[in-house]
Every structure is written in C-alpha cells, then in structure tokens.
Image (spheres, rainbow, N blue to C red):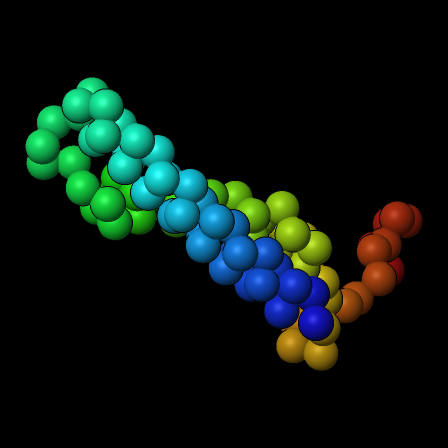
Length: 87
C-alpha cells in the first residue's frame, strides 16, 4: 500500500507539474519572451515534470527513501541487531 501511495503522489506531481510548466511556457510565448523553438510538451517541460515526480516519490511514505520492510526482506535485514560481543 505505501508503494501505491508513493506512485500515486508521483503521478499527481507529474501531471500537475506538466500542466503548470506548459501554462508558463504558453504565457512566455504569448509575451514574446522566449525563442520560437520553445514549445509546449518539450524537453524542458517533460524533464521538469519528471524531476517533480521523482521528488514527490522520494518524499512519499514508502517511496524510494522510506521503504518498509516486507516479506521480501532478506534474512540479514530481519535479524535483530547485536549490541554485545559476538559469541
């Protein structure tokens, strides 16, 4: 479930980011403040939206930085930590 929440947050961030970056690009083009090669859904907008999605995924619970240990965790990860000398 946490992976689903993280993926959902990343997808929402990508969509909202792409819409916002396209709107800003359209305004800049309307005001003649950009080169004519700049277009909506270009490399700059897609790349910016991907960066926002990656940041959202990493910050979401269960995302890349906050993985929860599930049944696929290795035995070394599930083993309790030893604080004393080794036997």
